[in-house]
Amino acid sequence: MSLIDEKAPQIAVLDVSLSTFNVAQWQSGDVVKTEDFLAEETPIALIYNGVSHAVMLATAQDLEDFALGFSLSEGILQHASELYEVEIKTQSNGIEVHCEIASERFAKLKEHRRTLAGKTGCGLCGAENLAQAMRYPAVLKRQQKFEVSAIAKGLQGIKAHQVLQQKTGATHASAYALADGEVVLVREDVGRHNALDKLIGALAKAKLDKNGFIITTSRASFEMVQKTASAGVSMLVAVSAPTGLAARVATACGLTLVGFACESRFVVYSFAENVLTEK
Image 1 (cartoon, helix red, strand yellow):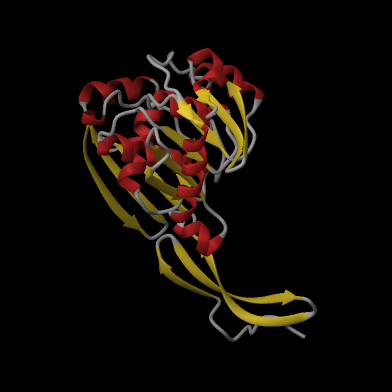
Image 2: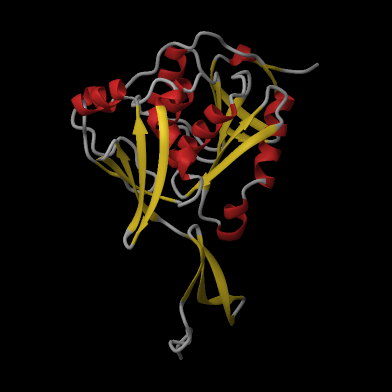
């Protein structure tokens, strides 16, 4: 017996980030035909001053934030003001994001130009040499101290804003929380690096102070630490584990790194003195 009605339409695209799929759900011996929500992956080409630089598989929402955040975290831009214009063009096989940037920054980009072919959740794709791949962040100018309750509040707050995750179970999120744990910005994507780049872009546009912290629903890899520190944020809270390299780099650049974070437990891998325990 076929579990799927082959005559029925299999996919209905609801928007650029979400679709439905006809499925057969098996549970406790019973088969039920139903619909399931799926997160979409779309090739996103980042084009600077007419020259293609990177192609990433990403969730096609918040693309202006993505363009700005990627440009800042990858060192293409030094300041948000150096991105003059973003134009989004939908093509038959993906989306082009055209970025007009300052001529000085574009000249630097051409000197170090590389072609990326990004895959969901990957890091360091397409780097031509070790120096490009391992861009260590500068030491943070200041460290903040946070109450334990702020971390718990932030973890609770991010859940309410994970709209795509609630529907699909397939996306990561990055959030910016104020010093007291109030979540004020959340961005989602099928890729954890993409979600963080989107958040960094949104944070730069919002011009918020950097006294808060970033939460990621993924593990804390080297690149997640590098991007957080490059944004000038002094604490990264990850719901999963860090890598050894991530912990060492966090220590070297002054970033407080928290892993295995949930509302009742977490592990601090660097600068534990910056996470205060309430009496």
